Length: 253
Image (cartoon, rainbow, N blue to C red; front, side, top):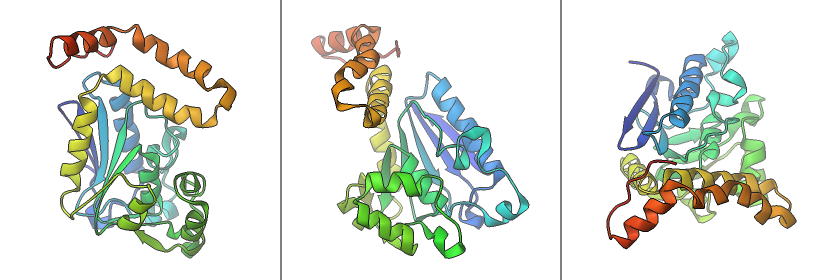
């Protein structure tokens, strides 16, 4: 079996890290395969949204330390850890977390747009316990997604935090019983995939990019991305379908 599985069904792509014997730790082959999957997701018109998950009841234990010692490249194409943490994925990406998401595994989840987790999942950045630092997003993304002092405690202690605790602070979108994560993630993905693909992609882009825009330029800058949506064929189709009380047929243009 390949180290990474890639499947597409009904507009939803699923990337599954398939190294359960190594707790889905990322080596060079996994990183390259994820990077190639992300390329497919953004290039293919039959994909509207994607899910990242792990096989065997474990999301990801982060970097494979054996691969690290061998000098394997786990940051291909300049896209960061696992070919993802520094990448710009145009379409929505959901992390479906069963079990543990630790170190780089947690940073992969932080790089996703939405997170669905099981009630027994744990999240942590234990790098400091190994004399390392969480430089694949943990140090820069976590304090933007959690209260500062909670993020600081997680980083400096290396302790794990439960999915329920992170749900209370808004880091996670859904917490479901163990074994039901993929079902919940697919349901969320299907809801997104039913919407206009151009509108969804542009909405994500503005939401992400506008965090760094000056407040005085917010509306001017967003118009650059959003005004073409109003002139698109999908916008006309959405209005027509609503008036005709039918489901829209999106073309992504």
